[in-house]
Image (cartoon, rainbow, N blue to C red; front, side, top):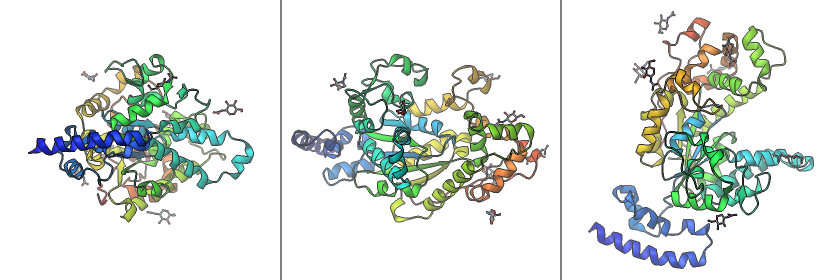
Length: 418
Ligand SMILES: *[C@@H]1O[C@H](CO)[C@@H](O)[C@H](O)[C@H]1NC(C)=O
Ligand SMILES: *[C@@H]1O[C@H](CO)[C@@H](O)[C@H](O)[C@H]1NC(C)=O
Ligand SMILES: *[C@@H]1O[C@H](CO)[C@@H](O)[C@H](O)[C@H]1NC(C)=O
Ligand SMILES: *[C@@H]1O[C@H](CO)[C@@H](O)[C@H](O)[C@H]1NC(C)=O
Ligand SMILES: *[C@@H]1O[C@H](CO)[C@@H](O)[C@H](O)[C@H]1NC(C)=O
Ligand SMILES: *[C@@H]1O[C@H](CO)[C@@H](O)[C@H](O)[C@H]1NC(C)=O
Ligand SMILES: *[C@@H]1O[C@H](CO)[C@@H](O)[C@H](O)[C@H]1NC(C)=O
């Protein structure tokens, strides 16, 4: 029974595919019916959702998943992105909007003056749409220096993407025990964006991490685009932890804060606006996301980084359920390896700024031992609404702050329609 309809479907798709590739460009053929054939001929037959899509053949919604990891700087998004990057059918891109921002920031002052927020967000969305449909050539508009013959050495954080560090994109294959960051920049030749597009097509699903879109409402046109089946994972983190992490990672930019932290006295020139707007955006997005708006229905999942760090297997499974993919063994193995290692042994290994290999619980809480109470109190005042909405408790004393047996993360389940 099952075999016969499968065979018929494959034959139908194969013949349609021949016609399609003849009349369509590479990019357009992505949404042709043989995308379904690719899926239907693989293991997804067992899954009831896929089966109904496959039975339907033509008139289906597009079965590719488009996952946006929507986050803010230093909120644990590198770690969370890796959970998606490890899936063998996911083509993962780490912050492609970096290039757009660079290009606009560096453009002539006349253009810069005329560039308003809407135009920049429009450029962000255009790039996301093109990447979600596997057109990596679109990146060439923004990458500097400009790629020649579709080749570039300047793709931002290429080695955070497993697909860009493995065959056919890279001729070398990494050692399974090493993170790609440790070898990919040395061993892989210049990135061929045509090959990268093809790798994206063959993987089936696309996941993109960004920290540059301010609010989830800015993504509305993407959620409504019929070419995409967008799932937004909104990663949030305790703003006190976000600040502490930024102070460590970007110490030049946070010099005044470091002085405050070390002396206990607030310098007059300390800039409170960045953390304030981070909190404002986080709250605005969560409020939009939890309002059950029609255009976000089934497409929005808020994730607190702390929940993921305290219970990685369970939370990762929930994320995979939400995006509609199976959590492959490779993902489980990665979690095992990267959330339980001893802090002391991990620091000697790959101690770069975006390292994800460490004890996830200890890392999520370490800010409580490294931030002066005075700063914590100030952030609590600036971000009180955000803390309340997302279930982070305020502390009233330094003793309460440093007492790690006293949790500051309240139990919370976010009710969203999925
Ligand atoms: C920005 O422009 C300057 C001067 O034209 C150039 O030297 C620099 O490489 C550019 N930077 C980027 C990121 O494009
Ligand atoms: C990039 O890859 C494509 C597809 O394999 C190939 O046709 C092209 O020659 C490559 N470009 C360069 C400059 O090697
Ligand atoms: C972590 O440390 C403990 C005690 O110091 C040791 O027994 C254990 O083997 C270490 N685990 C790893 C993965 O290094
Ligand atoms: C704040 O100061 C303490 C000690 O004075 C130090 O251990 C900690 O690393 C500092 N925190 C940051 C985020 O710089
Ligand atoms: C946060 O602080 C503002 C100003 O003090 C206050 O109006 C608001 O009610 C507070 N929000 C919460 C949730 O406590
Ligand atoms: C630390 O917090 C725990 C749990 O709230 C509490 O039982 C304990 O008394 C606190 N310890 C100190 C030294 O305050
Ligand atoms: C929160 O959840 C944890 C784990 O499920 C449980 O042990 C704890 O008792 C809960 N706390 C509250 C206040 O409900």
